[in-house]
Length: 417
Ligand code: EPZ
Image (tube, rainbow, N blue to C red):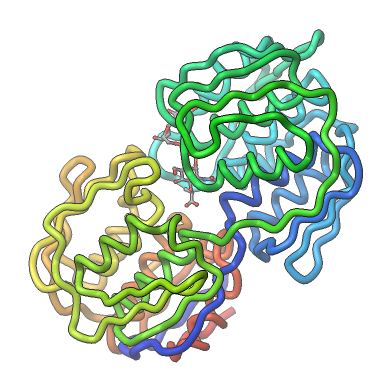
């Protein structure tokens, strides 16, 4: 199991190119199941979650190729309808393939998904929504069997939580269903806009992009298209947090400032100088961070839950006491135990983390999930001395070339096999 060794305490300087969005490419790969012909997805990040999603397509009988950050998918109705337990355990967001498979073949068999541990991650909203579209769901030996022998029929769906994955699953299923589907309390994350853009170009009829009411008018077929994936706003947040923590001045390229307004505001409040110019963002911090009395993550456009662990990692050596509240997931604080190994003074009270900034020491830590792992890396960058981070497979799920990108910014990071 490889480890990341970080010789921290070095200020960051230079430019970093932000990759395509992990949380966009996954639903887009699920959308290719609805198309016929060769789909080209450009600006595709070279990360293990994409490898897993391409494997899912291959197991469905769909040929794929991946070169130079471009995925080529020979899209057609899947020959198989089973999402194997192996891949479902590897990546929870695999559930988003269900809607597409069901819409194309009238059947989908999926195992309960696995993926990062962020507290219980139910899929009840997905199941209820697909049933409302006409699917019959039965359970057999840990597998869910969705059938819609007469096809899916559009309807009105009220989401009890504005779930990103469920919103995506419904849009995918509804695009090729008969009739019209209205999704109320839909999630508004930018990745959903990217999915709607892709489907619309492929021939889908979808209104309400960017709002919490999305209307999908089912069509007969979708064509193969060539599409450029939006930038990864959480990877951008990760490098903002890195320079906020280690100090220095960096420029991020290929960002969409509009998607990270809430993140920019929070780091400006903590004392960073941030200027956006077109698709670049310059971030500077040389006087240490000020504590933040209260930040709570909520669905978009609020401060995103995925940037929560990154912010906590920045605040552990800020001047004063900060409070971060996790507003989306039950439990996203497993990484805190690893920051405490560095001497961090953090108290978890329910969904709140109360952080008293102080000087820290390097330590040996591990990753429990993607963003928690990134938080440990960020913390280590700001601490003079050698920290060793294990289980970095979690980090490789969502960050393309993170070691190369950090070293190009003047960090001193290497991988120990
Ligand atoms: C997506 O996960 C992202 N993943 C997550 O990013 C992100 O944290 C999350 O949205 C929130 O923005 C991908 O897009 C691949 P949800 P998703 O359904 O769709 C509850 C990362 O680090 N819920 O919006 O799984 C759920 O438990 C990952 O990149 C139900 O109760 O998130 C959570 O409390 C982590 N029943 C809340 O809704 C359901 O059926 C929001 O979850 C589904 C969700």
